[in-house]
Length: 268
Image 1 (tube, rainbow, N blue to C red):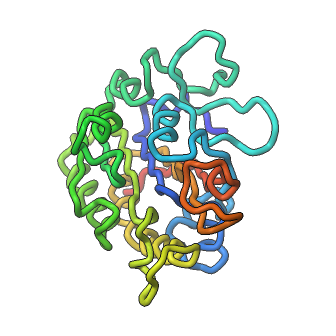
Image 2: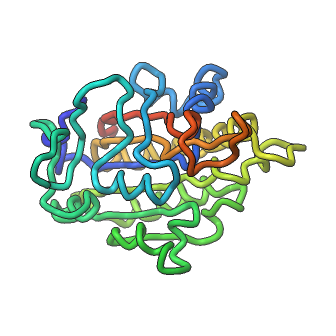
Protein backbone atom coordinates (compact mmCIF):
# COMPACT_ATOMS: atom_id res chain seq x y z
CA UNK A 1 0.00 0.00 0.00
CA UNK A 2 1.16 3.51 -0.75
CA UNK A 3 2.36 5.73 2.08
CA UNK A 4 -0.11 8.58 1.66
CA UNK A 5 1.01 10.37 4.79
CA UNK A 6 4.30 10.97 2.95
CA UNK A 7 2.71 11.89 -0.39
CA UNK A 8 0.47 14.66 0.91
CA UNK A 9 0.86 17.61 0.29
CA UNK A 10 3.67 17.14 -2.25
CA UNK A 11 1.49 15.38 -4.83
CA UNK A 12 -1.60 16.38 -6.72
CA UNK A 13 -4.41 13.86 -6.30
CA UNK A 14 -6.61 12.56 -9.11
CA UNK A 15 -9.64 10.48 -8.19
CA UNK A 16 -11.65 9.06 -11.07
CA UNK A 17 -14.76 6.97 -10.48
CA UNK A 18 -15.80 5.03 -13.57
CA UNK A 19 -19.47 5.06 -12.72
CA UNK A 20 -21.16 1.62 -12.92
CA UNK A 21 -18.11 -0.15 -14.41
CA UNK A 22 -18.15 -3.87 -13.70
CA UNK A 23 -14.93 -5.65 -12.78
CA UNK A 24 -15.38 -8.29 -15.48
CA UNK A 25 -15.88 -5.59 -18.12
CA UNK A 26 -12.79 -3.70 -16.97
CA UNK A 27 -10.76 -6.91 -17.09
CA UNK A 28 -12.03 -7.73 -20.58
CA UNK A 29 -10.90 -4.29 -21.67
CA UNK A 30 -7.38 -5.32 -20.69
CA UNK A 31 -7.60 -8.86 -22.07
CA UNK A 32 -9.02 -7.71 -25.42
CA UNK A 33 -6.55 -4.83 -25.81
CA UNK A 34 -9.30 -2.20 -25.80
CA UNK A 35 -7.94 -0.03 -22.96
CA UNK A 36 -4.20 0.43 -23.60
CA UNK A 37 -4.04 3.88 -22.01
CA UNK A 38 -5.53 2.73 -18.73
CA UNK A 39 -3.52 -0.49 -18.79
CA UNK A 40 -0.28 1.50 -18.99
CA UNK A 41 -1.10 3.15 -15.66
CA UNK A 42 -2.19 0.07 -13.75
CA UNK A 43 0.29 -1.63 -11.41
CA UNK A 44 1.19 -4.91 -13.09
CA UNK A 45 -0.89 -3.76 -16.07
CA UNK A 46 -4.05 -5.16 -14.51
CA UNK A 47 -6.97 -4.09 -12.35
CA UNK A 48 -7.22 -5.16 -8.73
CA UNK A 49 -10.51 -6.78 -7.70
CA UNK A 50 -12.08 -4.98 -4.75
CA UNK A 51 -15.46 -4.70 -3.04
CA UNK A 52 -17.40 -1.46 -3.11
CA UNK A 53 -18.66 0.05 0.17
CA UNK A 54 -21.94 1.03 -1.54
CA UNK A 55 -24.12 -0.57 -4.20
CA UNK A 56 -25.20 2.68 -5.89
CA UNK A 57 -23.59 6.02 -6.67
CA UNK A 58 -24.79 8.16 -3.78
CA UNK A 59 -23.94 5.69 -1.03
CA UNK A 60 -20.60 4.69 -2.53
CA UNK A 61 -19.37 8.25 -2.96
CA UNK A 62 -20.30 9.26 0.57
CA UNK A 63 -18.08 6.40 1.71
CA UNK A 64 -15.27 7.38 -0.65
CA UNK A 65 -15.30 11.00 0.50
CA UNK A 66 -15.12 9.80 4.10
CA UNK A 67 -11.97 7.87 3.21
CA UNK A 68 -13.51 4.42 2.69
CA UNK A 69 -12.35 3.49 -0.80
CA UNK A 70 -13.16 0.06 -2.27
CA UNK A 71 -11.98 -2.68 0.10
CA UNK A 72 -9.36 -5.30 -0.82
CA UNK A 73 -10.97 -8.72 -1.23
CA UNK A 74 -8.57 -10.91 0.82
CA UNK A 75 -9.48 -11.20 4.51
CA UNK A 76 -7.53 -8.95 6.83
CA UNK A 77 -7.29 -5.57 8.46
CA UNK A 78 -6.60 -3.38 5.45
CA UNK A 79 -5.20 0.07 6.29
CA UNK A 80 -6.70 2.93 4.35
CA UNK A 81 -4.99 5.57 2.22
CA UNK A 82 -7.02 8.42 3.73
CA UNK A 83 -9.19 8.80 6.78
CA UNK A 84 -11.26 11.39 8.58
CA UNK A 85 -10.09 11.26 12.16
CA UNK A 86 -12.27 9.35 14.61
CA UNK A 87 -11.55 7.34 17.73
CA UNK A 88 -11.29 3.58 17.49
CA UNK A 89 -10.57 3.30 13.77
CA UNK A 90 -8.92 -0.06 13.15
CA UNK A 91 -8.10 0.71 9.51
CA UNK A 92 -6.01 3.82 10.17
CA UNK A 93 -2.26 3.24 10.30
CA UNK A 94 1.06 5.00 10.04
CA UNK A 95 0.82 5.28 6.26
CA UNK A 96 -2.73 6.68 6.34
CA UNK A 97 -3.16 10.38 5.62
CA UNK A 98 -5.51 11.40 8.42
CA UNK A 99 -7.54 14.60 8.24
CA UNK A 100 -9.08 16.33 11.25
CA UNK A 101 -12.22 17.01 9.22
CA UNK A 102 -15.54 15.33 8.53
CA UNK A 103 -14.52 14.26 5.03
CA UNK A 104 -11.37 13.98 2.95
CA UNK A 105 -12.44 16.68 0.48
CA UNK A 106 -12.41 19.38 3.15
CA UNK A 107 -9.34 17.63 4.54
CA UNK A 108 -7.45 18.23 1.32
CA UNK A 109 -8.64 21.83 1.33
CA UNK A 110 -7.27 22.24 4.87
CA UNK A 111 -3.87 21.12 3.54
CA UNK A 112 -3.85 23.83 0.87
CA UNK A 113 -5.39 21.89 -2.04
CA UNK A 114 -7.83 23.35 -4.52
CA UNK A 115 -10.68 20.83 -4.64
CA UNK A 116 -12.53 20.34 -7.94
CA UNK A 117 -15.48 18.13 -8.82
CA UNK A 118 -16.36 17.38 -12.44
CA UNK A 119 -19.67 15.61 -12.17
CA UNK A 120 -21.22 13.03 -14.42
CA UNK A 121 -24.33 11.10 -13.36
CA UNK A 122 -27.41 12.65 -11.80
CA UNK A 123 -26.19 12.72 -8.20
CA UNK A 124 -23.72 15.43 -9.31
CA UNK A 125 -26.01 17.54 -11.50
CA UNK A 126 -26.75 20.30 -8.92
CA UNK A 127 -30.29 20.59 -10.29
CA UNK A 128 -31.90 19.92 -6.91
CA UNK A 129 -30.86 19.63 -3.24
CA UNK A 130 -30.02 15.93 -3.54
CA UNK A 131 -27.91 16.49 -6.65
CA UNK A 132 -26.02 19.24 -4.82
CA UNK A 133 -24.85 17.29 -1.75
CA UNK A 134 -21.78 15.59 -3.24
CA UNK A 135 -20.55 18.47 -5.46
CA UNK A 136 -21.23 20.84 -2.55
CA UNK A 137 -18.26 19.35 -0.70
CA UNK A 138 -15.85 20.89 -3.23
CA UNK A 139 -14.51 24.42 -3.58
CA UNK A 140 -15.26 24.24 -7.32
CA UNK A 141 -17.79 21.96 -8.99
CA UNK A 142 -19.16 21.58 -12.50
CA UNK A 143 -22.03 19.86 -14.25
CA UNK A 144 -23.91 20.43 -17.49
CA UNK A 145 -25.77 18.10 -19.88
CA UNK A 146 -22.70 17.68 -22.11
CA UNK A 147 -20.92 15.75 -19.33
CA UNK A 148 -23.99 13.76 -18.31
CA UNK A 149 -25.11 10.25 -19.19
CA UNK A 150 -26.99 11.14 -22.39
CA UNK A 151 -24.16 12.84 -24.30
CA UNK A 152 -22.17 10.32 -26.38
CA UNK A 153 -19.03 12.47 -26.07
CA UNK A 154 -19.35 13.11 -22.35
CA UNK A 155 -15.84 11.93 -21.41
CA UNK A 156 -14.19 14.17 -23.99
CA UNK A 157 -16.15 17.11 -22.59
CA UNK A 158 -15.13 16.17 -19.04
CA UNK A 159 -11.47 15.98 -20.03
CA UNK A 160 -11.64 19.29 -21.92
CA UNK A 161 -13.14 20.93 -18.83
CA UNK A 162 -10.41 19.46 -16.63
CA UNK A 163 -7.71 20.74 -18.99
CA UNK A 164 -9.18 24.24 -18.79
CA UNK A 165 -9.17 24.13 -14.99
CA UNK A 166 -5.61 22.80 -14.84
CA UNK A 167 -4.37 25.49 -17.22
CA UNK A 168 -5.53 28.33 -14.98
CA UNK A 169 -4.30 26.87 -11.70
CA UNK A 170 -1.10 28.22 -10.16
CA UNK A 171 1.74 25.77 -10.54
CA UNK A 172 2.49 25.75 -6.81
CA UNK A 173 -1.14 25.21 -5.81
CA UNK A 174 -1.87 21.56 -5.11
CA UNK A 175 -4.95 20.04 -6.75
CA UNK A 176 -7.46 17.42 -5.70
CA UNK A 177 -9.36 16.65 -8.89
CA UNK A 178 -12.36 14.34 -8.79
CA UNK A 179 -14.09 13.18 -11.99
CA UNK A 180 -17.17 10.98 -12.14
CA UNK A 181 -17.08 9.33 -15.58
CA UNK A 182 -20.67 9.05 -16.81
CA UNK A 183 -20.26 7.21 -20.13
CA UNK A 184 -20.36 3.71 -18.61
CA UNK A 185 -23.68 4.29 -16.88
CA UNK A 186 -26.87 3.55 -18.73
CA UNK A 187 -27.61 4.32 -21.49
CA UNK A 188 -24.34 2.93 -22.85
CA UNK A 189 -25.81 1.11 -25.85
CA UNK A 190 -25.10 4.25 -27.90
CA UNK A 191 -21.44 3.17 -28.05
CA UNK A 192 -22.31 -0.02 -29.97
CA UNK A 193 -23.81 0.69 -33.42
CA UNK A 194 -27.10 -1.12 -33.85
CA UNK A 195 -27.54 -1.97 -30.17
CA UNK A 196 -30.82 -1.00 -28.54
CA UNK A 197 -30.26 -2.36 -25.03
CA UNK A 198 -27.41 -1.99 -22.55
CA UNK A 199 -25.30 -5.09 -21.99
CA UNK A 200 -21.84 -6.26 -21.02
CA UNK A 201 -20.81 -5.74 -24.64
CA UNK A 202 -22.10 -2.17 -24.84
CA UNK A 203 -20.42 -1.24 -21.57
CA UNK A 204 -17.19 -2.65 -22.94
CA UNK A 205 -17.57 -0.43 -26.02
CA UNK A 206 -18.20 2.54 -23.76
CA UNK A 207 -15.04 1.73 -21.78
CA UNK A 208 -13.00 1.62 -24.99
CA UNK A 209 -14.35 5.08 -25.83
CA UNK A 210 -13.44 6.38 -22.36
CA UNK A 211 -9.91 5.01 -22.65
CA UNK A 212 -9.31 6.95 -25.87
CA UNK A 213 -10.24 10.26 -24.21
CA UNK A 214 -8.05 10.12 -21.09
CA UNK A 215 -4.41 10.58 -22.27
CA UNK A 216 -4.53 14.42 -22.50
CA UNK A 217 -5.68 14.55 -18.89
CA UNK A 218 -2.83 12.39 -17.60
CA UNK A 219 -0.31 14.38 -19.66
CA UNK A 220 -1.52 17.75 -18.37
CA UNK A 221 -1.48 16.64 -14.75
CA UNK A 222 2.01 15.16 -14.97
CA UNK A 223 3.39 18.37 -16.40
CA UNK A 224 2.53 20.32 -13.25
CA UNK A 225 3.35 17.89 -10.41
CA UNK A 226 3.69 14.24 -9.44
CA UNK A 227 0.22 12.73 -9.16
CA UNK A 228 -1.38 10.20 -6.86
CA UNK A 229 -3.90 8.59 -9.21
CA UNK A 230 -6.85 6.66 -7.80
CA UNK A 231 -8.89 4.90 -10.47
CA UNK A 232 -11.87 2.75 -9.60
CA UNK A 233 -15.55 2.04 -10.06
CA UNK A 234 -18.19 3.00 -7.53
CA UNK A 235 -20.26 -0.13 -8.23
CA UNK A 236 -21.11 -2.52 -11.01
CA UNK A 237 -24.49 -3.28 -12.54
CA UNK A 238 -26.47 -6.36 -13.52
CA UNK A 239 -27.54 -7.11 -17.06
CA UNK A 240 -29.90 -9.98 -16.27
CA UNK A 241 -27.65 -12.18 -14.13
CA UNK A 242 -29.89 -14.35 -11.89
CA UNK A 243 -32.82 -12.16 -12.90
CA UNK A 244 -31.24 -8.91 -11.66
CA UNK A 245 -31.01 -5.75 -13.70
CA UNK A 246 -29.34 -2.53 -12.63
CA UNK A 247 -27.74 -1.89 -9.24
CA UNK A 248 -28.79 -1.04 -5.67
CA UNK A 249 -28.66 -4.75 -5.00
CA UNK A 250 -25.86 -6.94 -3.64
CA UNK A 251 -25.25 -9.28 -6.55
CA UNK A 252 -21.55 -10.00 -7.06
CA UNK A 253 -21.51 -8.15 -10.39
CA UNK A 254 -22.55 -5.03 -8.46
CA UNK A 255 -20.20 -5.46 -5.49
CA UNK A 256 -17.06 -6.45 -7.44
CA UNK A 257 -15.28 -3.39 -8.79
CA UNK A 258 -11.97 -2.62 -10.53
CA UNK A 259 -9.45 -0.59 -8.54
CA UNK A 260 -5.98 0.86 -9.08
CA UNK A 261 -3.71 3.29 -7.25
CA UNK A 262 -0.46 4.59 -8.68
CA UNK A 263 2.00 7.44 -8.38
CA UNK A 264 2.59 9.16 -11.70
CA UNK A 265 5.90 10.99 -11.69
CA UNK A 266 6.15 14.53 -13.01
CA UNK A 267 7.19 14.73 -16.63
CA UNK A 268 9.09 17.63 -18.22
